[in-house]
Length: 113
Image 1 (cartoon, rainbow, N blue to C red):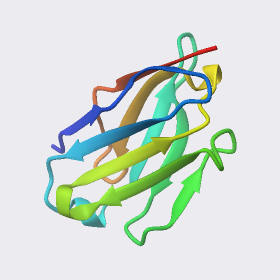
Image 2: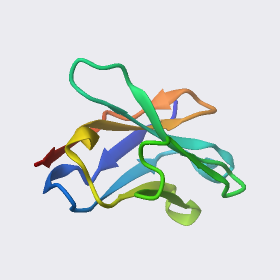
Image 3: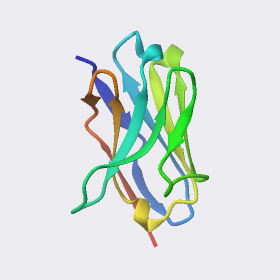
């Protein structure tokens, strides 16, 4: 079972930036597709971004141009750089190993207006 640990969440004002990290326990991390999702209170968990082993990336329309997903295979870590944050970005952010179906415990992001 892959263990995923997110970090980097916090409270930030609108327009600010945060970088989330997700460290994976599995050494074959480099061949896995990794995703970021988020869940706001009362809402379903939604897709934010994904990065494939090839480096190709996809984003939800709501974050395009503001968020960047990246990976460091040597560190078994995937990142989510978030800029121009909005109150609507508030939620718990989760990373996911798409192949293993594993989720991290989540990290809270709160954007104040």
